[in-house]
Image (cartoon, rainbow, N blue to C red):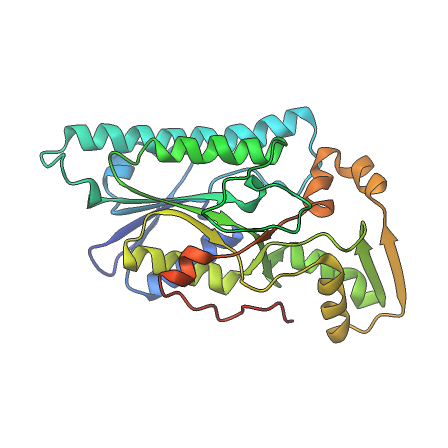
Length: 287
């Protein structure tokens, strides 16, 4: 495990080698935190050495969802989260000052996929109208595992939207056809995207660390977006001459149930972040 030592606060990150983990590692180190990558074989001693644990672990959901892969998506998230929660319990019960719940902060990722899809309702953290599909049920279980640690540490649940950055993830795939003059509209194009820039996501997590806030936070930009609007915005930077619409049935054939990530969506609002004083640098989607 690699450790960058600058001051006394140690931040352990699962999924540290991914796009978000890499950006977080860099920003936290620049902010003076000691960063520890919690690899798959992390143990209770690693967790005990952390003041803050950020749980980003989980298999990529942007692939074809076979039954086997859906099981991997679920187990990679719930298994890691459950281990961390159990370790925090064990550490708390074995430390001298067991009354000090606030000694550690556990930030665990979830997703806006927990909310109902394809509705005009705007979902804040105070809304409890959740979906019932695979992703929604996964998020409920995922958050449930994290909240088991709430008796022993401060717990913050960060419900990520689609992370928009040219460094990786969805945006480069959306841009690619436009580089060849092709505007691609996914499904109807009217489905909403709950999204956030990578920069604001990283700043938001550091904000939670520095304010010590706990509970559920929507990690999405306040400005709403549809796939059609995103395609139009991309076309302003990469002029397009041909428009192609990819129907839902074609995506279903390629991605199986994973097509819902592209063909369904919801509108979420980061009410608790904004109420807490966080300011978005990129509230609207721009290239």
